[in-house]
Length: 342
Image 1 (cartoon, rainbow, N blue to C red):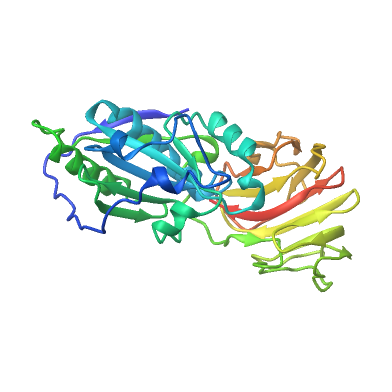
Image 2: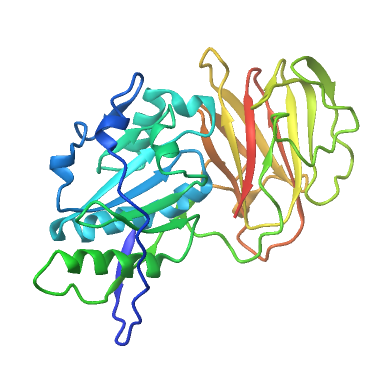
């Protein structure tokens, strides 16, 4: 749930604007095979003519995209009547994010009502020469890209640029009030004490693997979790097949563990290939998380994986310190992709 506050800034230095060239023709780019729009028919050049456009490149299991989203939603609401058009461009990181139903469910669950282009073929991503999630591009009323921001943060600067571009299209000034966003749950800003890196399970980008066994590629193997993990090392327990993108638990029970330092621990997980849900139990330093449970975990550590997405499993309520996280999967088939922190 978002609570928005206005912050009046009396003496504001406006950011300098650049010209990064014309906006890609979104209508043409997303009419290729296997692309579609959510919440809108394909937006034509005529529909965007004379409009200031915010293009938000995101993907629904990316924690950085999710923490950026409350600001995009706030700007879409605040400046809708001033001529702003917000377009979400969903460019997937993982294969399950290419599934249209998964994206539609995520858009609905996240309460996104502005147009979203499904960019599973990366046509818009490539046209923008983009390399980041999230990435925000601001287009002026003449169809020129005037500003971009990559990653989280600098929200006030981005909004001031947005106001400048809208003022170019108006006879009266919008002023310099900017939104402040108070977001909860997964969308809340990261803490200032994060010492653990994003860590992938799939062998294509896996780092920090701490099981004593060698990681086997595309073949079932039995792994064990050591009695004590060094900081920022992760391990598996049970029989897993590690693919390029994810690890799949072949038989239950199975485990994953991580020695981490941050307020939040997230894990991108998916149910079994046949869609069967997977039950789990989380511990923190060997105990139920209690007040340190995440939004997807009960205080006793239990939960269930029903859809492929990012799960918030830990949010520490007290001081941040080194902790050992462990998740036991009680059913087979879970797909484990990526640890992220906040």
